[in-house]
Every structure is written in structure tokens, then in C-alpha cells.
Amino acid sequence: MSRSAIYDGREITLSACFGIAMLQPGMTESDILAAADRDMYRHKQGQDRPTGHR
Image 1 (cartoon, rainbow, N blue to C red):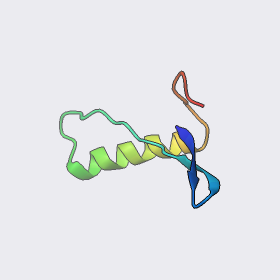
Image 2 (image 1 turned 135 degrees about the horizontal axis):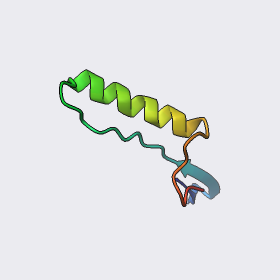
Image 3 (image 1 turned 90 degrees about the vertical axis):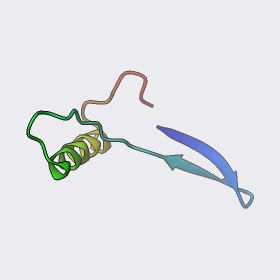
Image 4 (image 1 turned 135 degrees about the vertical axis):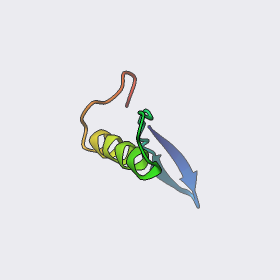
């Protein structure tokens, strides 16, 4: 997701990327965070973009 904004008289573009992971039985806190990180980096690399992504 990205959005343009005016800051100090200049146009800047802000963007955000989120990773989503589903908790599976036996997963630790570290496991779920690692899975979400992998998902986020896939999106940043342009893979598996959700419908409606710009």
C-alpha cells in the first residue's frame, strides 16, 4: 500500500508492507514471527500480491 503526502512543501510517497501468518499447532512465538516476515518479504519482492494491491 502506498500514499503520497505533502511534507515541508514537498511531495513524498509513503508505503507499507505487512506479513500475515496463521498460527499452527506447535508453533512458537518465534515461528509465527518468522512466517510473517517471510510473507512480508515475498510481497516486497512482488510475489503473491493480494488483489487490489497498487
